[in-house]
Length: 570
Image (cartoon, rainbow, N blue to C red; front, side, top):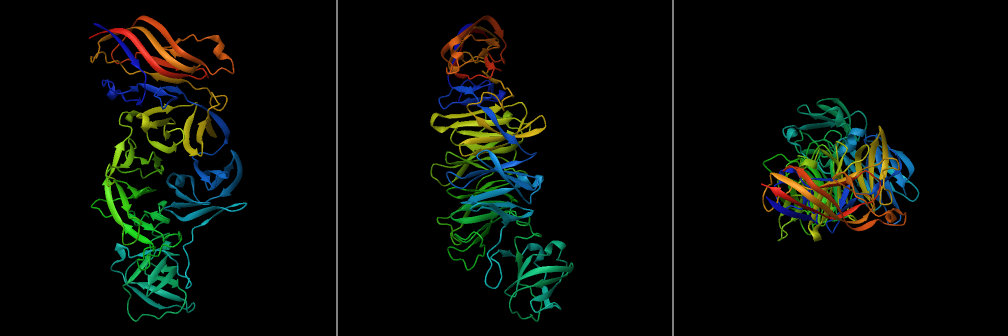
């Protein structure tokens, strides 16, 4: 039997899994709910939520800042986009994507334009003009002969197929293509084929071997079957890019259904030109990830290198500058990313943070000390129990918070301050279910489903409750004690003491702490100082939290440290 005095004045690991309760050197807690970890290591009650308005089921949000004063929030739902300015909806416009498509819709912004890609749709471009918004189909640049600057390739399954090109009854610009084996499908209409140094567009399909095509300008019919032909990599038949970013003043596409491991970079400064040309330094680039394993590209990140996150590993394409002759491709790690949903990787303190294929790891991709190889550090190694099928992710750089919405409606968040060694996980809960999160400028927006109604809300530090009428409670609980390097069999507590700041409500082990009456004045921020409660003789078992601080009152609270005085028996 012995006495102990345990003080915890830093909560730098946040809520940790019970697997780590036996480790005495982890600055974690058993529960951290609706609380934020401060840069100093203390914790305070999270801000409340302010209602913006109603929104739609399964909607997603995308920020669209044009400049310092013109900033829009886009809310996508079934075949429509709501546009918000200063928290007010100013326009609704039609869009092509259905609800199920939004989970894998990817985007990249350049100045006043956002480019959208989805493997089942042509790319689209949303442009903010002087007094309006315009959503239109992405158009590859057209040359003087009406050919377009789109990449072409010979797909493996067509390697043995030749084309016989003969005349058509329509006009001199049309021809009949007859394949030596079944090739054409209904989705071939609109597809481009490169043959006899001409681009042809499939106008109609007669059957699996015969199609009517057209081109522009003069041509001569070849006297023999054509084996040297190729087709556009992007089409309704072959699919469209699924990933997008900008890198070194190039627009980057990647991953079609037919070429899931391919990457295309536009001509430098010409985002609509993907013609590889003759390999000049500013020409477009086409490359693939070569590996014994089958890689599906999941997303792209422009960092010091072009990071390519795939279903089974993380690659980087380097070159400074990146040119057709300087492309260097290397696989660095083998974690893999989620494929069934797009959760944009977040840039946090110079590193790329992404969700692993399993949905159980939050990985930090950063370079080693030599700046040559990437590592994929697991950021939630102590808190796996909080990862429950992530469906949305966003990072607030101003407040150092990474928000991750889970399918069960909870929101896990990581408080990360590298300069004070804080990497703390916790959860946010509300009366309802979080559905989506978006960080826009200095605001954090969420879509919350309350009583089957989807609400657009944002965190507001002046709000003590959620959307005026929804109260929430907070709770922080300590881990089971390790006393003098022993796992005790029996524990009794004499006293629990806390140092608090700007606090107006406090329950310790479900006992209310009496605070001075004067702090409840509206202009008073709350109590600052030490408080304590005597619990002489209170007995606890080995795996039980010795202390818990909580409240369901809509008042502020900040806890800087907790001390427990008692005795133990081993």
